[in-house]
Length: 127
Image (tube, rainbow, N blue to C red; front, side):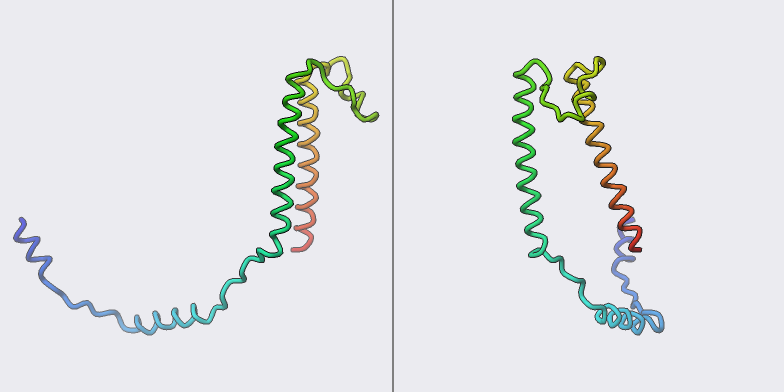
C-alpha cells in the first residue's frame, strides 16, 4: 500500500493551463489595478464626535451610579417631578419605585423609537 502511494506521489505530471487562462488572469489583474483605492475614513472629522460621545457616556455612568445610590438609600420615590409629569407618577396605582422606574423605561423606549423612526424617514427620503 505504501509503495503504491509513494509511486503516485513521485510521478510528476506536467500541469498545463487551459487556453486563455493566463490572458483571463492578467485581465482580472489589470481590472483590479485600475480600480481606485477606497476612500479613507475621515478620523479627524469624527474625532470630536467620538470624544463628546465618550464624555457623555462617562457622565451617564456617573449619574447612573449616583441615582442608584440615591434609590437604595432613600426609601421613597422623589416628589420633584415636573408639573405635567406629576399626575403620571403619583397615581395611586404607581406608588412603588418599580412602577416609576417602569414608566421611565417606557418613556425612554418611546423617545428612542421616535428618534429611530425620524432618522429612518430622513434616510429613506434621500434614496
